[in-house]
Length: 555
Image (tube, rainbow, N blue to C red; front, side, top):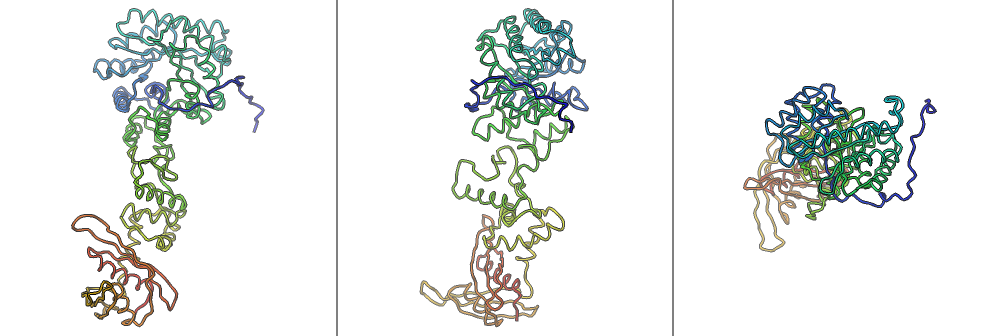
């Protein structure tokens, strides 16, 4: 690879940086640029009605600042904004933002589009980087600065006669490729020209138009401007990170540590090239740390549906928080840890979420527990047990986890992923419906002792290879009586190692599940049997017969 073709981008000398010692404690001002930056990056840009639906989604999610487009660029962009105004779709607490270059005819058209809006952000920009000054504009620093100043004066002139409030936003485009002292010089010139006050602030937006270095360098640049810009108490420092190096989210989060007040981005990171910063991921990151993201992101499935339908783009399966597979574990060790973590939460009745491999509770964002664990050839005993309990309510004894997982493993190796229904089908076939050659039919029990230890007389009716039979036995309880009777009747030597039971459902028609762990003392083979009935005693007897059939013992 011809790596010598490229050179390192410069960093700033900033040994007094303070951002590494800071923490994010509150959400910034969010500004969605889906309808401008995101829309212009689509293969098929949205039409007016689609943009209106997307705008309504953003309002529903709680965005208070929304960049609605570039109304001077095309009739569709202009008409969209007019539709928002004429149909009174802009809530009183939402400020729309429009982008425009520093040119008089474009600003005139922009203000025509804004007519009737009580408050708007007019976002002007010009590129100030070393490369763009050289190869695009062929201008020196002073000439480039004059473009910014002229644009600011034009906005100020139009704002003077505008019947509503105009907030100026200025972006030194390609900020990350600009000498930091020159970027500050241009921004200060804009601040001087506009004259913001603490009561009427302006926005200085510092975009990572092209991500050119590691996120810490961007943080240094933001903090340096933050500490040196004029009239800081009258300025809202905004960032607009792109994702060319795949670190847009990290850059935005470090920029917040560095003093940024505001973040411009898109849903799911849509945007030019590798995209804008993904606001949803940053907001969910805050949420996972116990910070109110100031957005209503409780139904991520709805957000995905609208986004995919309108943009005609897909959310990646591994997209943080929103991807279909991000709350899914295939690995056996992961499944086991999730299963144990979920059980611990229930048993401890903890109000604090703490489950291995799941940074947040999926239900908090409209996802369900159902897809958390999925079974394939990499899955283990914990995952299969989790499926049985989560989907079907069967709390398999710990010793049974491996036995049943060994039944599922060959299926997963043959076909790949095994669905919960397939797992349940195998459970029924291998345990609940294991009724041959021994099939329990009915029973009758009678206590024949007044002692607490008790003594139970049992009459058990069953079939053996289809032949109807019965036996009578006495034991210190129903299970003991049945075990003794079967040993004598079938001339076998078995021992019950463990017994478990639990309710499968609530209410008058509730069923119970019983699990018998049985050892054949002759062959030294052990297995589990499972029985289900609305009567716990009958469930236990069925579990005994299930285990006997699995052991292969019969007359």
